[in-house]
Image (cartoon, rainbow, N blue to C red):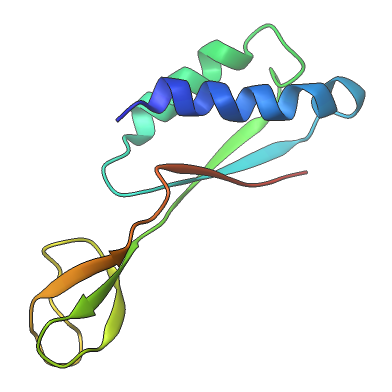
Length: 105
């Protein structure tokens, strides 16, 4: 995963507004496979000397949307999670974003 590039994009989006009014915290949502430690390291390095330097980073985790191949139930999870309704195998129908900016304030 390209966590550093994704965090750099989020920082680039936030910095112009942060120069006027720095947020106290920023929430980033990570998709499956994203590494929290890598995201935190990238955030700390990329914000260290800028207007986001004192901003607290919060991380949430997003899950894929899966559909059971046996009963058709839609459920959130990560492969190979089984269907909570019947225990069948699922297929990813909608991937969670690798990284999404959820909010700042």
